[in-house]
Image (spheres, rainbow, N blue to C red):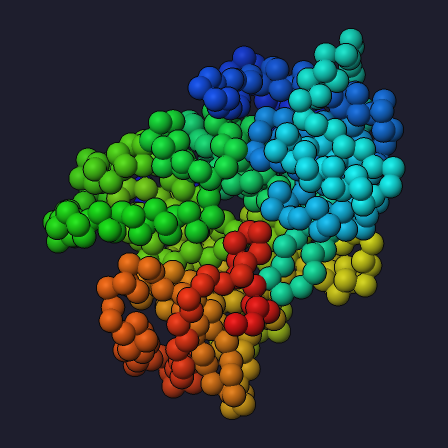
Length: 535
């Protein structure tokens, strides 16, 4: 199919989780929704069972906690985790998903801040739950295995009336430069965002929920969107043995962050280099191009060896959470695997824009979702400015921080803090973060993210960070261990590589100094480099 506009997919209307569950129960019934691996056995949950479990557990929560109370959840990905999320919201209470990488004191601080006294946790977090109990008074910790008993104790259950516009979830962001803030979302926020995203991208077949559910992107795509589209979902408790899972389950599509795609990409490139077939694959790519326009899937056969290494049935990948290098997108496209990248932020529930499978622009983050407005605030001579968003996907506000809410939402427009521009067709191009922008003494603005993408393409670069020192640009590089071992002078190697890069850049963007790191950068729990970190 040619790269051009085509109609949005028709999505059934729903504004609450209960309405979503009623739709999918009617459509899919006894079809398998979730699969989980328990040692050597596999357990399955159908749509009917999920509907009944949510209704009964919501009834229990309603009778036990009343309404508008906060209930937190922590643990690795599991059926019980997503069941807890749905049941809390459907009981007219507020779910607080907790980042499983946080320490007990950090978790306790968040729970105290949002006045949460109940935590539901998986067995791997027994110690964390005990530690928090020693910090917070009148604290209740419930192990997930008890949930089944709660469900079985409910003889009859009815749905509780919920307010679609009331707070339903408090998501604590993990910022790279500042303190976490509690993003308050309603059911309408979350459901409108999921519906709009499903109208852009059709999901089908099988997938593996790889990303932690406490990430809003993961919950929206691997949770809500999969549920709506009837996707058979294997829940992976962690990112261990990812390739084994992929080859065993043979997913049709995956939702991941760029870090996962980058590792797979490097592995594929290493195998191609070792096989000596790089030139042959380049020829096959050229042979396939005329057939692409005729919608003939020749690439599936020509690149079957690479595709078989990814399960053999992978059609596309949804990448979110951070920018992804266009060169990686192009390489996967040549293998017959489409990478669909977009843009989102927790404050917007989270998806704002996305490229479509058959309507996209290279280098962009796609067009705004249906019913979502995007504008560029205070654009410069190149049309670049702050990306602002308006629509039902925008959060209710930051929990108990009204002054921050007022700064972020002005006249109904949420100011993302991201820099970007729009083309004539409404495709959005993101260039960096306002707070990361480097302003040189000559008045020139430099986006470090742009340079980091270019440096990341240099062979042997694992991580890099661009900063300013004495009005000059400095690149810190953490190199690949194999390259470090192979190069007698790693500093000279990267100095030469950066000099070559500088020849392609305007003088004001030239890197003046290269620092080689012996250790990885300190990162957030979402694996983004902390820019406030000092070497």
